[in-house]
Amino acid sequence: MFKKCVSFVLILFFMTGIFANNTSTVDPDTPVTYSDPIGP
Image (cartoon, rainbow, N blue to C red; front, top):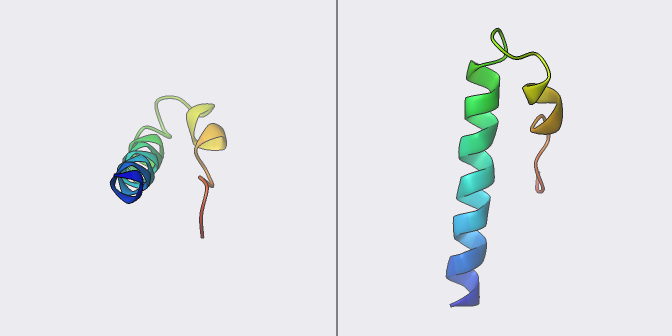
């Protein structure tokens, strides 16, 4: 259960990171927040 929750959070961070990179031209302040999520 715990592993599944962690994997879900990592995927969520990964998706938000891609979304922030895609909308960097619209909102330049967003990529700074999600530029380097937890993890490598």
